[in-house]
Structures are given as structure tokens and as C-alpha cells.
Image 1 (cartoon, each protein chain N blue to C red):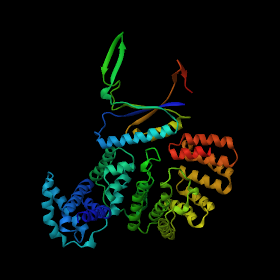
Image 2: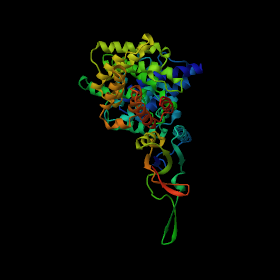
Image 3: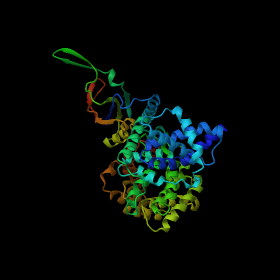
Image 4: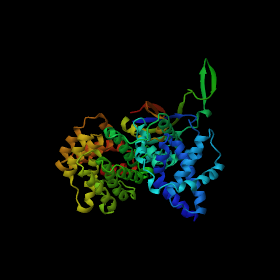
Length: 125
Length: 405
């Protein structure tokens, strides 16, 4: 079963981070990604730049609307995603628990619904 | 001389930090301000000791400097510039020094430990608070040990200290009547430094980093409360567990306890643990930490006897279940039943665990898989191993389980 581990955390951080703290956070994410990859369950992982670089696009009545900023202006914003392939929700919870960002944010687990493979949308089971 | 003074200051910092902080903070409950003054005292020592030599009673010297600093702060609404510190502190030290009896500095660390584990303090911050207040660790060292961002840990510690000050949590040792209930969180917080539930992927670096500090705190507590069997039980538990750590610290591979090379265990630590456990057992008041220590003691006995007494383990786990029926203890009990009475009986004991959380509990699935394999139910075992592996995030443990599947 494919799951997205959607990472949300406060942006900007509640307390400005020093370089050393940033380095520690990156080291934690490195260890996490390595473990999840070596376990053979990782599909992909990306952590996004902060929301001040976000651009939101919509089309209303045929008119393009480009907005400077994130879709939802919330304290905790979407920050990254780990796509994993594990047997069930309990296994997904086990990995979400170990995600470094679970310490300072929230990891939302969402099962994949359909997936585009080889030119067509297919149900994910 | 400089390095000698620095080394002396450092050794002192470790031994005396908590003693001095406990005295300084007790006056008004302000740990933060006491920390600042004590830090000033240490900084002052590092500047002056290389020239003037280490004083005869360095602890009293530090206490005097810190106290002077404190009254300076209390007198002036604004903080005085640190430039004036040397002068201000230096003036008073020598005159007051003669009046202080080196042996008269009381040990108030017990009250400080009770403050750190006070019911009004968030349980998650009690262990970090002890490490900071009693051992003098800074927030980033503690953050590293708990694999948390520095800023998050610093914020939690500051919040807890302000709470202690603002709510005026008293720096006292609880009365006999409430001692039992107040002592448990102190024991748990000290044990918490040993068994940190690492948020990081298990198997990465910080795993064992605070085990020695935990043992130090347990030893201090055993000195301060020598007549409490659970205090001794905790000191025994941590010593005996720590004794086996060295054996698997060097290995990247996961080696189950009963396959570890017992000759590599630390005999001195085992002996120390046994002494604590013996003293505790003489008081004839059993408790959770004593039972857990006794379980470790049975495992450690293999170092001399060459065998593990599984029958004794099963009895101890059964006793533990009547006092502290945690999920971990119930699964461990089922594993010992499997050893003594056979795999079928072990599986029955596992099945008897009704807690829903057992479905997501990795040790339960690993135990079930081992027992199924032993019972010859190969297909079921393979399914259970798969389930156990899917719940395992520790790379070494994963490799071990995959090897057995």
C-alpha cells in the first residue's frame, strides 16, 4: 500500500534557527531518509522551500489568477512529502513516528488513491 | 597551571554543579537566575584561578561568588554590566571565604530533584530539566541527546523553569506521607535518561549517550535516600543494564540478549548493581524497579554461571505483571513462558494480551514470529515476521529479523 507522509510545520519557525540547528535538523533528516530507503520502502522524498517562495495559481471564469503566497495561510504549512510503500497503516505510523519533523510539526498520513503509471491512471492497492 | 585550573573547574562543575545550584535556586525558586549567577562564578574562576591558584575550598568560593552576583542582581533593577563583575565579585570573596566551613555546604539536591519531577511539570521535560539543573548540561547538549532541535528543547526548559519560579514550586523534600507518590516521577525521570525513547530512527548515534548520566543521577539519589528500596532498585537496574551495553555498542548488528558474549559485560558494574539489589531486597518491600533489576540480574548471572535461569525470569515477569503490567512486560512474560513451557504455551500467553495496541507493537510480532517458527508453523511464522519487519524502523533490527524469516 502506498502512503504519503505529508509533513507540516510552523513557517516561519517559531524561533529563528541558527546554522547549527539547521545542520542538526538536516543530519536528522539524512539519518531518517537513509533508514527508510535502506528498508526498501521509500518511493520518493522531497522537502520544499518555505512558504514565502510559494505561488498559488487558480483559474476563475477563464481568468488566470496568480497569488503570491501559499494556498492556505496557516501557522503550520505543508513542507514536504515522503512517498512510501508499506503493508498497512500501522507500518506507515511506525515510520511517521520516526520522522524528525514529527518532533516540531505534524506528519499527516494519506493513502494513495490512484496513480498514473504507464500512460494510465490505475487504482493503488 | 591554566589547564590544571580549567580541569579542576570542569571536574568541580560535574560534582558540585547540582549542589550549588540547589542552594542558590532554593532561596526564591528562580533556577534561571541561579544558573546565570553560577555560570558567572565558573567564568570568574576560570579567569582568576590560573593566576591565584585553586582555592582551598573551591566549592565555597564558587558559592560565594555566585551569591554575591545574586545579591548584586537583586539590588539593581537592571543587570550590571559584566565588566564590573570581576571587581564586584573579587572584593567580597576573600573576606567571606574564611567564614565558610567547607563541610557545612548542605546537599539540597534531593529537593531539586523533587522540583524537577514535580507533578505540575510536564513529564516530557522532567528528565531534561534534571540533566540541566543537577548536572549542568546546556540545552543544546540535551537537545542532541534527545535528537530534538535546540530551539525546541531550550524553549521547553525555559518554560518549565519559569513555571517553577512563577508558580512557586517549593524546594522541599516531601513529607513521609506523600513521599511514595512523589518519588515515583523522580525515579521515572532518572530512568528516562537511560531509556530515552529516541524520536530519531533507532540505531543512529544518540542511542546510548545519556546512560552514564542516568547512572550518576541514580547513584546520587541512592546516596540521598539510602533507605528506600525502589531508589536502590533503580540504581541496581541501571547499573546492571549499563553493564551489558559495552558488549553491543561496538557492533552494528543486532544481537539478542541471550546470544550476547557475556565475557564482554562489565563485571564491576554488575557487582555494583548486585550490591544495590541486595540492600534493596533486605528491606522486604518489593517494587517495579527492584523486579526489573532482578530480571537484569538473572540475565547478568549468565556471565558467571554460563546459563540463563528462564524459570526465574518467568516468575519475575509474572510478579512484575501484578505491579506494572506494561505492554512490554506482558510480551516479555509471554516470551519467557515460551522458553520454559514451550512455544504453544508462549503463543497462548501472547494471545491472552487483550490490549489493542499489541497489534501495532513490534516486539509482540517479533516474539510471535519466533514462537511460531519454534512450533513448526513455518507459514504463520513467515507472515508474523513480515508484520514484525514492517513495524521495524531500526536498520539493525530489520536485518536481524530478515535473516531469521
